[in-house]
Length: 72
Image (cartoon, rainbow, N blue to C red; front, side, top):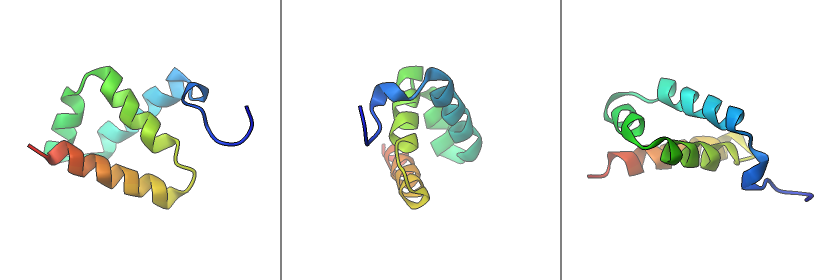
């Protein structure tokens, strides 16, 4: 496949690294809620964020994740 990133293109090692980075980068309630998510949900967030090509898109996706995690 050419152009774009397919979900299967991201290896488990990369996703696990992104999950660790998210756990380290989050704080407070967002970190607590992310840590309590099932590993499969943590990897889905990691995939969603890491598929972004531009840094500003990654940052925007991280902010969206924080908002979603902080909702009751």
